[in-house]
Image 1 (cartoon, helix red, strand yellow):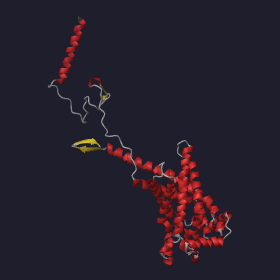
Image 2 (tube, one colour; image 1 turned 60 degrees about the vertical axis):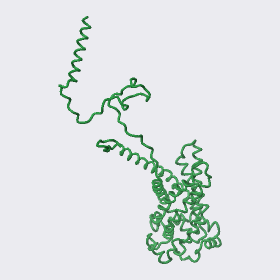
Image 3 (cartoon, rainbow, N blue to C red; image 1 turned 90 degrees about the horizontal axis):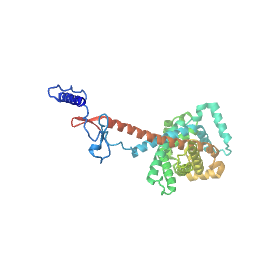
Image 4 (tube, one colour; image 1 turned 135 degrees about the horizontal axis):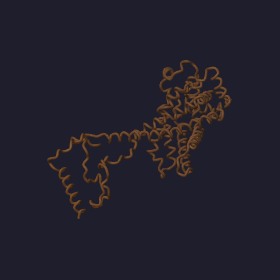
Length: 391
């Protein structure tokens, strides 16, 4: 009996407390400075499958979860962004490779444009050593400014157009014929060479002359235009187009094929750094060997007038026949090949490997920037109907 009376008293006291809280005479609590979310049983703070009865749903602790809108969509690069990233990556790759091999390249151009038959690799090294002793270390990089002015846009355009041609020809699809990979590389090389050829002419003239008037790009351009005419800047273009078509098509084809073989060898994993460098080196070696005679013809035609031998090298066919007749195959059309077999694989290995790492990194960086900007945009509240809501 006593226990039941105590329970009755307790219930009456609780009723009084509840009534006093709900009594209109009691003053309302002070308004909060910050609006509080309503504590009702909405879908934002209920846990359970969609078809669960309302009475079986459980309420989560804390305030209801606020919806942050639709989930973020994975960003895909636009074609314009792909063009910009491939241009940048190509310029970085080409500039780095050409800077490393600039002394060897200058030596090769010197012997290509010289009619001396007894070329040897040791003669090229001796020529470089002589230049270092008499003119200083930086003389070995003479003409490198013209090289950079030409190779940066050339490599950028070449790699950018290669990515575009690969997309157009669907080179990466399994049902696409493998020869399309060669066509993509060949067209990329032609595109880059056609748009930057005058700078290649300037670079060749600066590499083989020692007079002060050929020390800058602008002076060479003005002098050639004044003394030889505007068309002289494109002398040797025809053999250059054929040569770069063979070189670029072969090198891109071999590099892509060897990369695919490396992926299969690695069980589907990406090629390693060493595999990329070796693939690029092999691609450069074979590509330059196939197009080397046309490179000789191009250099002779580019520098003939500057060296006082322009009458001999006025046409591509005439230059080819002259070199073949008076200098032979090995000591004429393939003069300097031993130097090229060193610098060619080094340059190609650096170029292909650098682009293979820089281009995906730039793509990932661009996607990351877009994701961050999208996150910022979604988190900034916007005013809708007098109320602030998240985007």
